[in-house]
Length: 338
Image (tube, rainbow, N blue to C red; front, side, top):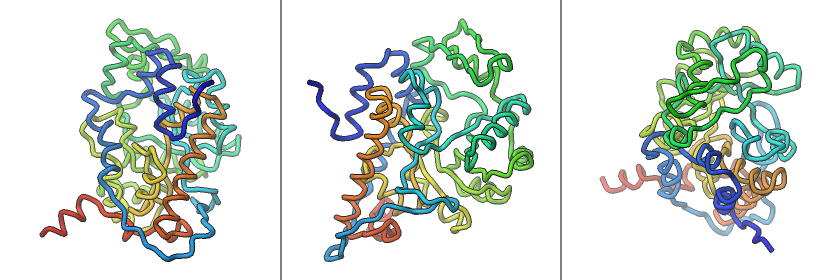
């Protein structure tokens, strides 16, 4: 009888066992030396707690509001691609397991980007997540080594090339070069806003300067993200720059964060540092690969259960009770020694 995973990390090893090596490496790998891939997780480990005691935590509420929409917990599913490589039901199984965040990529052909936006509006989507950190595809050496095959993009059959082949390694790299638009810039967000009434969240912000610029162009929210460490290696861990972005925004728009979140304690730390919610990427894929829709649901449930316990043991009865005073960061420790 198979052993049931008891935490999110155990789903990764099980996914490694069931997925073809090419696909597991595609999901799990990062760019170049994979420094940022490791740092995304390790940076959370260096944050510790300052729990409060003798507080009534007999009832814990995880609920919160994001862009005016009530959610049962500040844990969302990050925009991730190619779920069908993990499971035959792909994104359908993921969507059935939880209300999922969705994303678009701005293609070189603006008519295709407009088509995606129109589909989102017709199908009742509540927001658009615009990924802005991929003018080109990062150097993912595992995909090059495995000669990763780009899957058919059914949504754009007949509109985009779906048979791009490279003799230099990853077909995915060749596909990206044929479709991504490296000229896309801040001025183009005005164009995107002109074709939709949906709020736009911008994903891929890592600096104060870009957070301020994002607000200037009228985005509805910011996602602190380094693309799961799959783009620019040696970019900072997202949790390490979260406060910089939060301080720049000054509460004017919601700030969310992804990257490296594997425990409910990680969720608590992100909330304490100012995130309104977190987004989960790879663990969702691992759950999907191992147990389909049920696996996705279990990953979310595990993180919620761990967050609830962390809140109780830290003296927080609601998400609003989680404050900056509940955590100690590396910067805090450095300042205390001055």
